[in-house]
Length: 237
Ligand SMILES: *Cc1c(COP(=O)(O)O)cnc(C)c1O
Image (cartoon, rainbow, N blue to C red; front, side):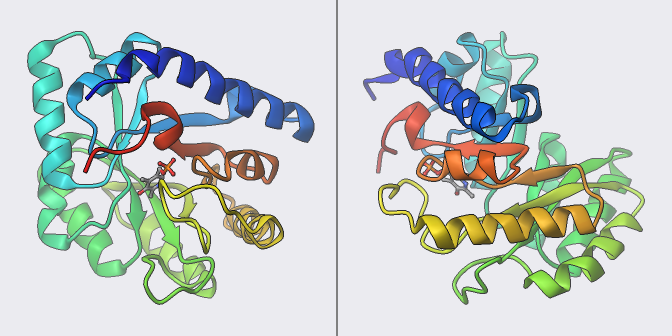
């Protein structure tokens, strides 16, 4: 559990990488939001990042997210924290995610969308969502195939309690936390395809980029990058 005292420096280093990539691409740093992925790290790690100015966080597992949000609300002091759910969501957990008041970045089916919409409607709230695209068409990855995105986007736009804001993708070979080896050309091509699709659908947000491919993502138009390892260190088992 040690090492969380390095979070402020690590956050600063990630911001510097984003700024350098923005400069290369002629973009404003205001247009790239850093999502700190805190999965498997304790609530104290979130508190440390929050104290260093971080406001947007991402979690992958519903129960873990609920437990941490509960601890953080008891502790007080993280009132401006914004949470995003970035993991695989089962329909029977839709209500729990709505209760958390988080955004959902991994909507990839009409059935999941309708479950979320119904729960949000019952709770008299709206849920911000991203549509997840399986840009590399990998059988083991979640997300719709790129050509199916427009039809699902249209369904999402018609659901009264969901607010579709953009697209999310994890490119081939990107294994969270296993950074290191990135096929630069292929990743850039996949990110560029995601940007084209986001434009075609006239959506404002594009969530691509993790610790290992952050620069490429920013250069190719990411408006959100999801960084875990390079902020919090290796995830505890
Ligand atoms: C874990 C995870 C990340 C963060 O990955 P790192 O390589 O640790 O930066 C980003 N996106 C998703 C969907 C993840 O599951």
